[in-house]
Image 1 (tube, one colour):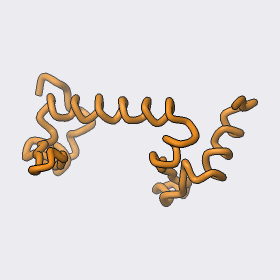
Image 2 (image 1 turned 120 degrees about the vertical axis):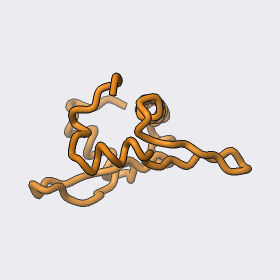
Image 3 (image 1 turned 45 degrees about the horizontal axis):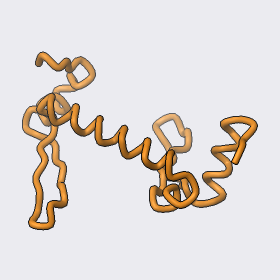
Length: 101
């Protein structure tokens, strides 16, 4: 499937339920989220790419000590903010966080 521009692709995702409205940000701009199950059906390569980005991001946060990961008996992961992560969020210093902290 070919799209002439990003806007056409975005509209296609919205119309087919692969992307859905999520709310608005503090500036009143709309926010959207992916419906991965639908995206898997119509663009599996895009869904896989998103999964990879999420995995890499979560791995980085874990390595930096900002999140904790626990597993249940079915090996399903649960993520939570670590004490170190809470300190950075509470103090507003998260934007200044480096891997060396």
